[in-house]
Length: 81
Image 1 (cartoon, rainbow, N blue to C red):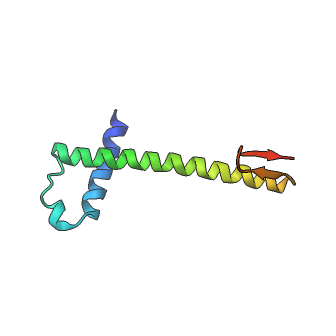
Image 2: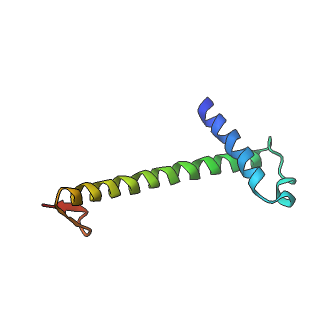
Image 3: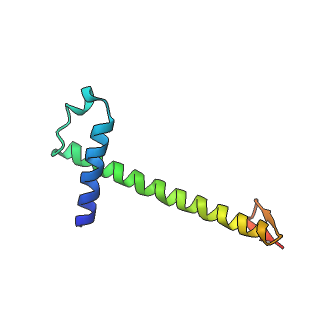
C-alpha cells in the first residue's frame, strides 16, 4: 500500500505543478481532490505504460519476423514463413 501512496503523492505534486496556477491554487494538495488527482494521474500513467509495452512488443515481433525472412500478416498478427 505504501507504493500506491508514494505514486499518488508524486503524481499529485507533478500534476499540480503542470496545471495553470489559477486552477492549482484552489486545490489543497492534502484534500481528497488532491489525492484523486494523484490517483488518476498514476492510473493513467500505468495504462499508458502498459499500452506502450504492448505496442513495442508487437513492433519487436514484426521486426524479428521480417529479419528472419518471413512476411508479417497484419490481419491475424502472425509471421508467415
